[in-house]
Length: 384
Ligand SMILES: Cc1ncc(COP(=O)(O)O)c(C=O)c1O
View 1 (cartoon, rainbow, N blue to C red):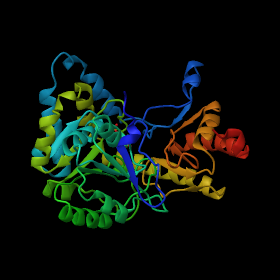
View 2 (cartoon, helix red, strand yellow):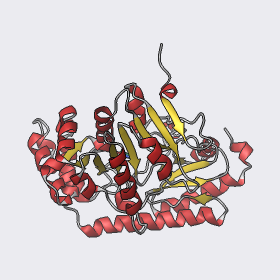
View 3 (tube, helix red, strand yellow):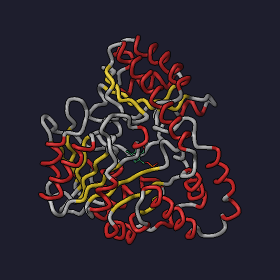
View 4 (spheres, rainbow, N blue to C red):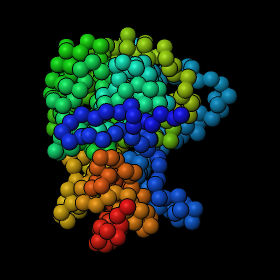
């Protein structure tokens, strides 16, 4: 008989009974959008936290230019890209492991660092990939409630993390968008690493480039020094390469070696590798323009909701998590009918909050007209 994934999960935090980390740890699902596709309509895709403008033209050229090499294995290109990632971060090749998206890195860490007795600990909600995979392989999962501002509750997380195999520290955190600053993250890590000698922490920085709050920092320097901290990064978000599938881990050489023994770099296609190589060479001004574009469209949308009494969290990402004071399912379905696709349900906030990815300014101006119409209807009419 199949074992329910919920049976593996227990949750910590005041009033948290019954909460579970559930759902697929995947972007790219368009709940309610299939009908629109079937009708040949072009929905506005605000559901999967992608860069709405896609990648730099040099990346596309590199991807198409890689086709003649498609008949050969891509080992040499994987080595070259690993070196380039290392150079980009001022570390050695031995500190880098590429993955088919950062998803592969998340799964590898879960596989390597959790066990039946030392499970996974993560905030709830957080990006679900690690919890979903831990559950799949029968390793226990503990979810820790967020604080009132929907940030990770570091005190509660500290208590829950003692004795864990792996802590998934998603910063900024998907789906809520909030981030913990560098000083607080380091304090949490320093205490944990001292008090819980067999725990590894995976710091997921998928949205690193989009964070704008003062004091936000990467944990790469700590990961290089300490074998029990690993950082995950991706080309899927700011670099607009979600469909190409390439990300990487940075960590201590012993930790990277352990991960590589489980999961080598063979999973990455020549297209993704050549794309990543080109992405690392795009002008800094292109990245800065993408960061600015996102920050402006994010601020516009956040203000639109706040002005109408719907509270967004302090997003450091390319999506917003907003208290729309009604179930997200009904809101999502009503928006989908109007051609705007937004994020899936995120328990335990699915009765009140919606996640909306940030598109271009023009797209967000179009989207808020739809939100206006849907929110004007009584919640009951759109409730699940
Ligand atoms: C926090 C976080 N980590 C990891 C991923 C996986 O991204 P990818 O596998 O495309 O690198 C996502 C995807 O949305 C994410 O939100």
